Amino acid sequence: RAPITISKLQAMREAGEKIAVLTAYDASFANLMDQSGIDVILVGDSLGNIIQGQTSTIPVTIEQMVYHVSCVAKGNQSAFLVADMPFGTYSTPEQAMENAASLMRAGAHMVKLEGGSWLAETVRFLVERSVPVCAHLGLLPQSVHTLGGFKVQGKSAEAAEILVKDAQTLEKAGAQLLVLEAIPSELGKKATASIKLPTIGIGAGPDCSGQVLVMHDMLGAFPGRSPKFVKNFLLGQESIEGAFKSYIQEVKTGKFPGPEHCFKS
Ligand code: KIV
Ligand code: NA
Figure 1 (cartoon, rainbow, N blue to C red):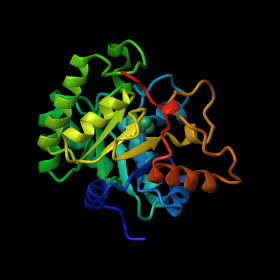
Figure 2: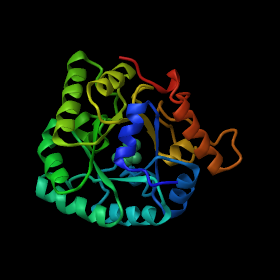
Figure 3: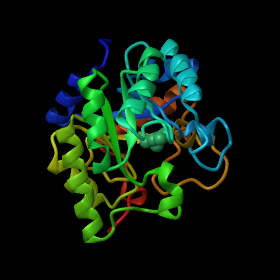
Figure 4: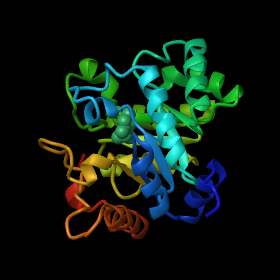
């Protein structure tokens, strides 16, 4: 298939075709996902939890991200490849550019940053220098210690209003994709309707332009309790490829996420 580009993702949003996204951290799974027809692969800093066994994403370094991005880039042929900028690597525009450049050199097509309007200057700085940016609002795992835990965000009217404003500000600054994590479905719908770029939800309801899950979560391969928005797609399948295809199909048809995977205001 032809390589997926940001213009293709934008066209999918406009056509109402849902965007299917999964995380990957190595060449073999990236290859299998790509062959299964995934639109976007995210090399998430969730690798701190998934690969390293940490209790948060905070210890993940730019060197570790670069290593995993280069592994995934080797296995991937045609999916759009997004890479997380880890904690403390985008505190100023200049620092962000230096670290984003190392992810782009490793094979990323876009970098992802967690945060609201305070990041607008950094987003513009990166986009002007040819680094496409995915923003990330709602539950920000790198902010776990300021948030006071992994909690659903945007529940109050004020918090919801701030999130919508942040989305508009980041779009205006040049962000071309937006991850929305752990927010009420109603807010996922409202934020998506307030901007033109594609939104990718994880626990953000069925009305985002696409969905993302952590690969190990959707294969039932992560030990311990999983969040409400996770569904095990390996159940009832005979192979990992079958699970990837079933996920992609359920995202495309709107079967996933169901009400049981969503949060209310
Ligand atoms: O790190 C990650 O895997 C993520 C997704 C869950 C959106 O940021
Ligand atoms: Na992340």
